[in-house]
Length: 309
Image (cartoon, rainbow, N blue to C red):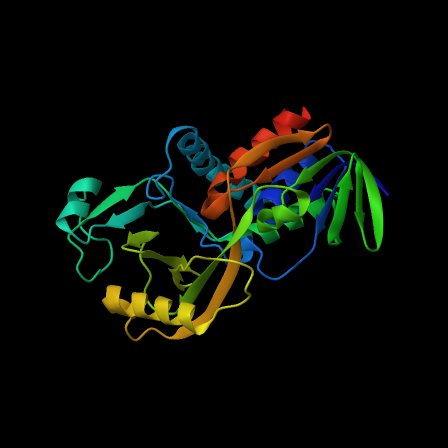
């Protein structure tokens, strides 16, 4: 089997890179292990470069992503793949006088917060990560892109191998998230757990203290824990922390119906988007900002491959 480009990993970053390549006439094979714990499937999907504390070049990359998403989502919708999203803003609630001064939180709270002394609104919003991934994969396949369920075991030169077979490609993109360590990349997993509730949601992502909430499918996404290691699932500690946070911080969620929980491994480590060796490229270490940084990452990968236009 042969292709111009093999993309390993079909989270939002890999799926977006594959879609943008296919749009430009590049023959792409997208390989995905479909292992439990993929970050995209559990992500909040926040587009919040300022509240996330980004600065310098990383802030510029985040602002690029925020600006790029409306056009990308309009394009996907026109192709028949609508995605839940909003760009109404992101808020940080001040819970002390020190926070109020540090954040210049002079705006009224957009949603009741116990102990809240005001808020600061920033440009931003959210996009539904699972919906975005499904839309990108649908559009990618419609362009003739090939999606294979395969757990890649080796990448050497232009040869990508897995238990059932192999392919050869002119270039290989490793968009493997928290599993970067198996390819010699400096990434480790940071498990995040989140709670899904019914009830009234804020107008956009709202940061308050150690957590945050945002709209999700007509309800509320409450996040998130952060613990290193490969332990799977949501345990009692994580569930208790999320439930206590929602109950103690947001009065409107006291009687909210339970919808479910999600979990996934954030790729923790230094952000790297570049060439590892001739013909092999990697995009890893996005932490909790993979969705926000995906458009910038895809643009950089296409530039490295010489197919930016």
